[in-house]
Length: 128
Image (cartoon, rainbow, N blue to C red; front, side, top):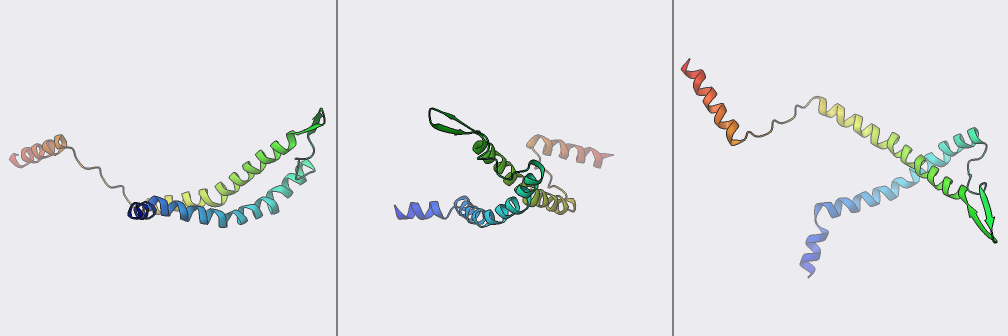
């Protein structure tokens, strides 16, 4: 039983997932700082308020509904996604493109038919 658990934990994708969770948790503070220090003040400059969660509410039978809370959560998600994309994904994609420019892709292995045709072609060339 412990042997199976050890094999499960030591698989590459489980370890990679654990590393990703730890890095993601550490990176949360950076993304939060970008959203709080740059994007929310920009929204406040444009719309007059950085937080709209308490502005759009209505009450029905003493129950308060907040559309602004939902909109604020959706906007925060979009802000975080944009920050992750523009600060991490896009630069890493550009770096990968630069690295790949100098390398040619490896050709796919030939099938048995292609190998046979190549041999026939080479034999015909040697006859001429």
